[in-house]
Length: 302
Image 1 (cartoon, helix red, strand yellow):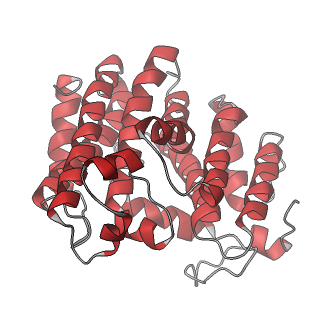
Image 2 (cartoon, one colour):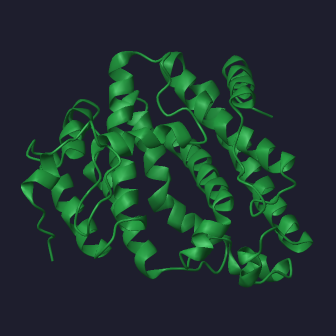
């Protein structure tokens, strides 16, 4: 079923009231979606990047967050809303999108030659979220990240004209690691939504139970589990950061920023005692900047 939305919902922007709540079947306005860049772990589109590049990164971010909204937050029939976005993505490639965010995406997918199949993976990931609530092992979780996170990095490489097979493989390590860290930051929130992204085999190995995720603070066992998962993500970031050294110019600046945000998040977990239940774990801007400068200068981490 393709969701039918009123035209004013698709094209209307209300800058005086950007925080208006959506009703079932509605999509958030562009200003609401793009405002989320400020809460990301990494700099999405740094001001040091050229305006054209920043415009493409903004357009991609708008699409990614719109799809996440449809799969995670939208009231009503989320599968139907994702179906509508899939059809609008097809229209985007023909210059006929109905939603403002998709309309803004058209120049980016055209100029940067981003395959529609790459962007469609995000829709599949969010469809999976409607029906798959648990992951048995790390391999299953990485399969999910291949849909939910890795296409983001691949799209960014297209923006810089460097979407090469070997570089995409390195980007996948970075993006999967960033996704895992985000899941760990959101342990309690995801559990309240009925989802657990920590592999079941890891929960069992550390003697943890799902009800531990609803506690006001993490148990000793759960902190050990979080430390294990964070360290695994850190190693993936380290391995993937070779990508920074393989790039130059603005591409190197941008990708170094993404890896830096991940490493700063790792440091934030350490500072919080690996307890994302007791307090919000967020990377500091100063630590992100320090890691960013080091990565850019050294071409990766060791």
